[in-house]
Image 1 (cartoon, helix red, strand yellow):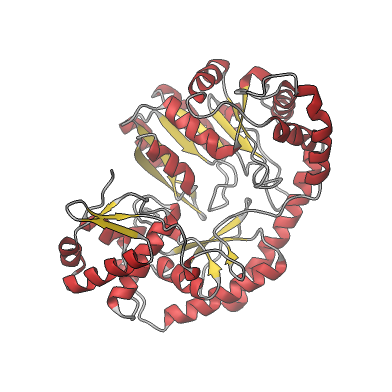
Image 2 (spheres, helix red, strand yellow):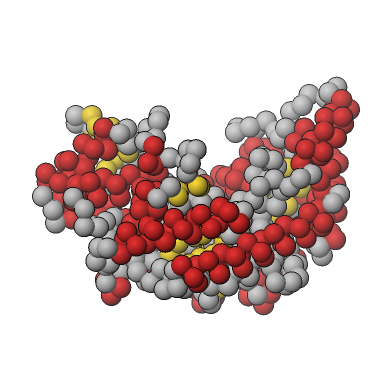
Length: 471
C-alpha cells in the first residue's frame, strides 16, 4: 500500500486556501486530488496531527476535512490503519460528469461519420473468422499488413511481423512498461505528459526521471542528455509529434541525437504517436520517430477516428514483438476481431479521414484562441502546432483552485498538475479545442465565471510558487 507523508501531501495542496471556511476548502482540494488521480485510490493519507502541523492549521481543521471526505465516500478510516483515499461508488453530483455538465477533461473528438458503415462491413466480413479460435494475441493478418504498409508509405519500411495490435494505446503503454522494465528501473518521461502513461510506468514499478517540455521552447535537450547519461533509464516514454498537452513537435536533429544517446546507454525509447499525424497549419507530417533510430512506436485510432474504437498497435523489432506476445497472455488473450476488421476498413480512407480531422481541429483551435482572447485576455495562450489541446498559462498558481470553481459552473476540467510529476504546473490548464463550437463557447464561459470567482480571493504570489520550477 502506498502512502503520502504530510510534506508530500502539503506540496500537492499548494495554494489550497481560497478564502472559504478552511476545512471545506481543504476537503475540496483533497477530493480533487483523488478525482484527478494525483492521489491514487488506496493511498494512505498522513495522520491528522502531522498534516495539521505541516499546513500550520489546527488539528480540528484537518479532522473536519477528513470527516467531510469520509461522509461523501472519498476517504475510509480504520482504527490503527489510518485514512485511505478511495473513489466512492457514487460520486457527488458537483464532482461528476452528468447530464448538464460539460466534460473538458478528455481531449477527444466525436466519431467520424464512417464508423457505422465500417462496422456494418466488418459484421459482413466476420463469418470468415468464425472458424478460428477468436483468441488473437498479435492481430489479424489483414490489419497488420495494412498498418505495415502505412508505416512503409510514411518512410519507415515495416513488415507485418513487426506489428502487434492492442486494445488501444493505453494497453500498449502498460504492456511495454511491464515487459521492457524491471521494478525499480528508471524511466524517462516528459514533464508535462499524458497522465495515464505516467500512471502505467508507476504501476510497473518505475522510478520516474522527468524532462521538461514547454509550449514555447519544446524539449529541454540538455536535460534529456543529462538524464540519459546520469541514470541510464531502461525506458523512455516520449510524445515527439504534437505532444500532449503542449502541442509541440520535436525537431529532426534532436530526435537523431536523443536516439543515438539512448542507444549508447541501453535505453529503449517508446514514441507515442497517437496524435502523430494531427499536424495543423499545413505543416507536413515528418517521418515516424523510429526512422531516425531504434525505437518502439505506439499508435491508435482513438484520437483520429473515435475513442470508442478500442484499437491500437505497437511497431517494433521482431524480437521485441515476440517478447510482448509472451508477456501479453498474463493480462489478456487478444484484441476483438470485429473491432480489428472495422479499423482495417477505415484505413483504406485514412488519409481523407485525417484531412477532415485536421480541418476540424484547425477551426476549433482558432475558435478557442478567439474566445479566450476576448473573455480571458490575461491568460497566455500559445498557438498550438498540432494535437487537440492548448496548454494555457494562467499567470498564477491557481489551476487546482480554478478546476474546483469550474465544477461549480458545470464544467469538468483537469487541473494542470494532473499532467505533471510531483504536483508541478499549478500555473497551467489544458483546454481541448476538439469540441463543437457550442460546447467550446459554453466551456470558455464557464471558465470565465470560475476565474472571476477565484479572483475574488487573493491569488498566491508568483514568487512562492515552487511547483513550477521545472517548467
